[in-house]
Length: 461
Image 1 (cartoon, one colour):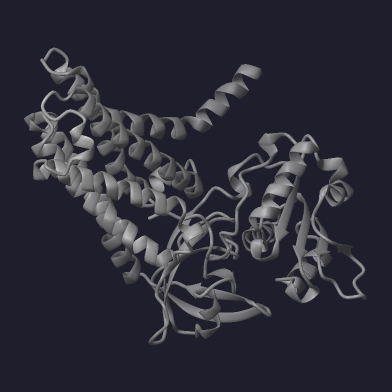
Image 2 (cartoon, rainbow, N blue to C red):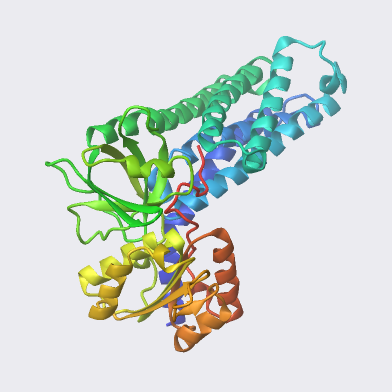
């Protein structure tokens, strides 16, 4: 019995393993060809290491365009948040390999030696390599510290994309002229293929997909205020089309085409509607920045481009136990509401505990609908509101979601329930640590969602 369970888990993880193997095979293949070609040739060993590290960095860098293209075939087994974190990690790896390159060349080069690192009296192609490396370092540092520097996301994204293209082209020119590796026809052709691959991924993300998404753009059919600072936008597909299938809890990227002067930026938002009702779909959005502050100016009839769905934050993608605990902070209720609505619409019999934190009673989103679910008990629901700034008449829980509250309402289900939680980063970390402290099995804690219901999730180009 145990071996069959292990085999089932391995089968479930096989898409992940296959894609990981494919990725690493692709990035190491140019270096493998380089080693095969240059294994017996004359030349300083350190320079060979330098050229090999540069080739590996170049391959990683070209694949960054593929990782950031939000291709669903790549994203589906992992979730987009994990893909973007991996994207950031590999950027650091590539930058580190490029830092190794000039040091190894200087240590092994007999003609210029260490002057390669400090002198500017060098061939132009070498200087181009220096400038490219400097650009890589600046791009990496700014990307990692964007919030510290308080750089607005859309401005950073435009510059990040432009610099990435410049680095790719300059790096190839530098290697073709200076390095002996790209003078080999086989290897040069291989690297040209890499550049074409990156260009196709970038073109698909920036041109092809937006074009076809615009052709099947949705129409805004309802704009509803849910709380003083939260609104729900409802989208309907064109008459001859249906909504894109999604799983409850997933998110999509939204671009609104509204009146003159209103931004048309693309932002990710959780889907708050139920996939069991495919006639329309909706996103519930809180005012949390410049873009979301303008959501109330959206009007019925405006057009919207939706790209997705993405993410693995859905109770349908994991083991489905008898009891499910949903923990929400503020607008973090949006993806959890999609799950609740789906359970209601499909007649699910899971016992559900909803612990929902807000500042005041006025901030509770979907209050009347949640009360109706509680009354109908479809699904069987226990609901706990926690307010941090309640008025004197409030009879419910006060403060913040903590170990005491979780134990009070989940005592008999801690070891058997699945926990899904979404909200601010501080709440996410607190809840996760609490569940681990209470010995909830990690397999019962699917990856939490950090406010994909707002405009401030982790994103990449």
